[in-house]
View (tube, rainbow, N blue to C red):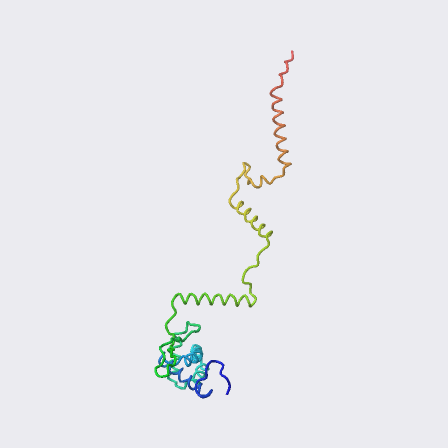
Length: 221
């Protein structure tokens, strides 16, 4: 007989084990909670959650997969129409196992396995949404989409900062000279032109002072 890989074997063989788990799953979906041994509860949990996942899918193929395990059509109908909508927001963890007092007689460890049908709290919903966003971002990054923009070189960053500062100064409205030109444009004139203008003004002042200080010529007889 092969060695079981998912826990202790239930019943006398694999077929008997499948029947035991199917009956336990049917009772769980019918009553929402059952009391059984801890070994059976641990073996029932993955099967029950798999069947709930099929019920959330809701198509005909999923219903046939569930009917292959649970033969009672009334229980399957309740699973698809009542239980699946209650756990639609959950991404797993549809069952809960709680240990209880040992069974009288053989002192077997007992547990209560029940369906978790209460809605998510606002905090749990926020955490689930954040985890989903993180997984989507990681998936998009693995698919080839860049998660972050590549850092620019230091020179290009300095150039961009200098251009933005000069644009702000121009847009802010520079001082206007008496001739009506902006001060920035006046400051941008060549130094030779400025020197030439200064020289012309000085020569004009010298000529005017020379004319004022010259003696008057005597009148001719």
